[in-house]
Structure formats: structure tokens, C-alpha cells
Image (cartoon, rainbow over all chains, first blue to last red; front, side):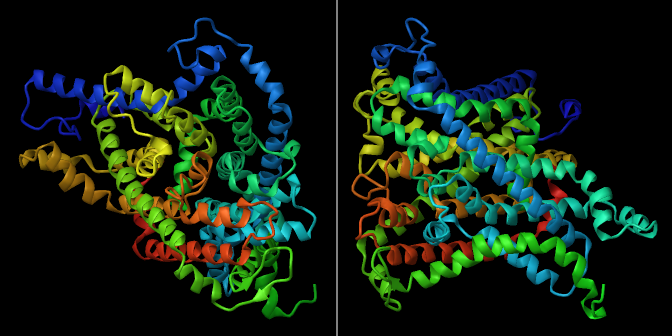
Length: 293
Length: 304
């Protein structure tokens, strides 16, 4: 990356003519101006949200900056919107979904990558097909299905409804990962007397950790942010996840932008904190997920 | 184990795959079949369902609101495909032009991507508020008081507003994909083009675009699929309103099935028929993707 700037003839957009130093400086500045302007556009809604969450409710529409920073908005909303409960609900659903998806998808992905058996392609394409089914298509039957199992309005039922799509996607991602691991490792373990399960458990599973990490990141973010199923399958206010809880809150706080912004901030903090810690894994995992999925 | 030898090759992979397969059958295949069957019935979840054959589809074909929703879905999809391919590609090219700090820019641009569609929808609904929302206030402060649209509240401005939110949120995502692809374009191609006297735009059109064509196609397909399915942000911001002016297939389905929660007139069979329309559209796009997406090219080109 750093060598690029010293290499002649790289993809410098702005070097139209064999350019003078002035022209280079000018186009470079222009590029920076454009890039910074886009940062401003992308950041503006978020900055506005932060600023508004710190205002006095009476000054929301009257001044650009808060006259006095009011941290007390956060504890007010924390309790008024019952955030401890909703954050706990989201955490529970996310944890359960991610665990189920990893446990179900890892061995399946391994088998698709490492075994040859008649019908493998067909079964794998069935998994692929499941990945492409839009959630709307199964929304209504899933609602009835959960109802008949007495899992409607239950966090376990909600996690259950996420497992299918999540598993199909994770199998697809993890299979690519297992394919990249050397086959010889398993062969030599097998000659040393390991059975099929031991080869998977002791040899390949430890090596698959980066792949599992990608699945955990993608699936956690997806489940945490999911809105349609959680807003439909959970009815009791106290069982709502964060996403549908903040959505419900607009009815109550429709013009209290300070409270709404503080609420959105609290809803965002977990995701943003993890993103800032694991940026590389987030960006890499999400884009790889999209490309390979 | 006493297993016939011809079943031998199935045992280990079968055991590895079975749990996932069962989960998939229960949570995807069964509901899927159920949705198809449901679309052939008239049912309100209270009284027993009645088989009506293709009656739901026939009525869809006469439903003006359905066609409006279909049109809005199409409109949203086409606009987001164009915007969310061209803008990220151009900006990724700027980032890839040898400037410093591209990592910082990427991290910042990616921020909105991790936010849920519901939360960004709620946030933008506040910004778009016509009377005292931040955007119209800024326009007034800049002396553009004459140009203060109703945004989400106007029947003509609601779809463009929704599309703006989508472009804002997804920019970083597609930009990172394009940036990774651009890094893989061989540098000597640019050198050769420069020696031939190609300017920046000509290098972009004749070197960059053809080289990363597979990635462009993938981004187009991803955008198309997301467009067909669009629901969360629109439901949160407008619920398909005002007066169905932003209804898409997703929101129309939802308002029929769950809009009047518990009401006995909710037409679940009819909503299921709309679900099948969404499904068929997604399948068509996915099949096109399989035809054009040569994954090996992609894997070779992209190391994110």
C-alpha cells in the first residue's frame, strides 16, 4: 500500500496530462476535498444524533449546539425505555442464534468440503437455495408455525426462526474456509488411527477458528440488527429486542427528539463499540460474506 | 457397525450434515412449502382456511395497490442499483488513487453499514421532518427556504427520500468491496494506458471498469436482491405511506398480514401470494447471478 505512492503510473485519477507539480497538488487537494465532503455527509446524521442526545428537550429545534451538555438524558431514557431488559433480550437472542448456527453449520460445512458422496452437489445446492429465500416469503408461515409450537412471543422461538437462513449462509462461508485447509493433515491423522469424528474435532476444528470468527461476527451483527421477525414474533413489550423496542418508542416520544436520540445512541453503543475494536474483522468479514454468499 | 457397504460412504458426512439439514427443513423448507399452499387459500387465522386455487393471484392482478407496490419496488431497485454501484465505485477509485489515509476514510465510510436499518430509518425520519427537522432547517438557513420538500411526508418526495437513506447507509459497504477489487487491478495496465496517452477518465472506463467487471456485476446483483426485499427502513420511516406512496411489495405484504394485528379481516392467504411474488423475483435474480457470476474469477480477484 505504501509503495504505491512511489510507483510511477499508478491509478492516479487526477494525472490527466503529463502534469506539472502544481496540477498534481491541485488534483490531490481536490480529491481530499471530495473525500472529506463525503465524510461530512456520512457522519452528519450520526453527529446530529449525538449532539441532540445531549441537548435540553427545549433547545432541540432552537440551537445547533447544546447550551449545556445534559448527560442526564441517558439515565432518563435508560430507565424510561426499559433498556436493561431490551438489551438483555437482544443479547440472549443473538447469543442463542449464533451458538446454534455455529454448532449446526461447522460440521456440515466440513462434510461438504472434505467428503465425496453421491448426491453431495444436490444437497449443497439445496443449502444454497435456502440462503436465497427472502425472509418475507416465510414470515407468515413462520408466525403460524411458532404459534402452533407455543413459541410465538418467545425469545427462543425468535432465535429458532433465524437458524435456517443463518445456517445456510454459514455453511456456505465455512465450506470455502475448510476447502482452503490442507487435505494431507486429515489423511495423516487417519493413518495414525483417528476416526472421522476425531479428525474433525482434533485436527480441523482448531484450524477453522478464523472461519468461525467470521461467521460469529456476521451472524451476531445480523441477528442484533434484525427487525422484521423480531418486530412480528415478539408481542409482549417486556420481551422486545432493542430494534423493535426503539421502534415502539417513537409512538410515545414522537416529538421528544432528545429522548429518541439518546435511545438510539444506547441501542447503537454495543455494535459501534465492537466495531471499533474489531474493525478489520468486521469490514473483511461482512464484505467477504457478501461476495462469497 | 453392521452397515451394508454401499451405505458406508454416507455415514460420516450424513452425521455431520444431518443436524443442519434438519434445521433447514424445519425453519426454511417447511415454511416455504407452507407459504405456497397458503397462497392458494383464503384464511384470516380465525376461521378455517378455504381452498380457493389461484383466486389470490387473480385478485392480485386486479389490485391497483399491489401494482403501485410493485412499481415502487422496481423504482427503488433501479435507483439504488444505479446509485449504489456508481457512487461507491467512483469514490473507491478516488481512494485508490495513491492518496494517504485511505484506511481512515474507509473506516469512517463504513460506520453507517453496521447500524441497523430500523435505527437509521428512525434517525432519518427525524432529520427529514418537514417543519423543524435538521435538513429543512439547514436549507432555510442557507437561504434555500423555497426548496424545502416534505421529504417522507410528500407523496412525490417520499421515494427519493427513502432512496437517499439507502444510498447513505450502504455507500461504505460497496465502496469497501470495490476498493478491494481495485487493489487487485495490475498496475502495469495503468502504466500502459498512461503511455498511450489515456487520461484519468479514459483509464477508468477502459482499464478499471473492464478489469473489475465481475465485481461490478456482483454489486449490481446484491443491490437488486436487496431492492426486491426492501422493508425495514421503509416500514420504520413511513409504513408505506403517505397513502401507499412508498408501499413496496414488502411493506404491502406486511400491512395486509400484520397491519391490523389480530383483526379477523387480515388476509393471510393474500399476503402469502405477495410473498410468493417476492420469492419468484428473488429466484429469477439469483438464477441470473448464477449464470453470470463466475466465482473463480472473483475469488482470484478479491482478497478482502
